[in-house]
Length: 123
Image (tube, rainbow, N blue to C red):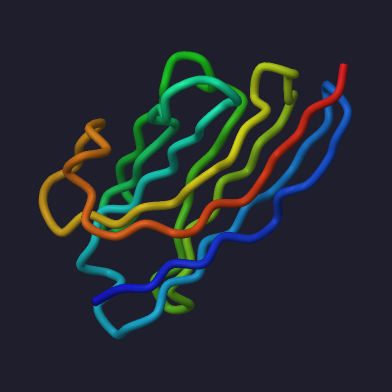
């Protein structure tokens, strides 16, 4: 069982930056692939980024590539999402998720989810 708690959301102007954190409970954090997803108002939740267990490999949605960076610190049981050059269309609730299997873009394959943190980007 893994419990995930996101933090770091808030209100920022377009072009600004935010850093999200997701703290995981349990001693097996390093055995999970970690992903970030987001849900904009009135839209379905979508994939943002994922990172492999050791942190060596990452993958991003085209919409955030070059602006967002996912990373993790297995000694602290934390996964991060650094968001730069934010746009109004980045507004939404951001969720971190853990998967015991291989990396995947499919949110249905993730086993554990946090409660989400709100990110609002004003124009």
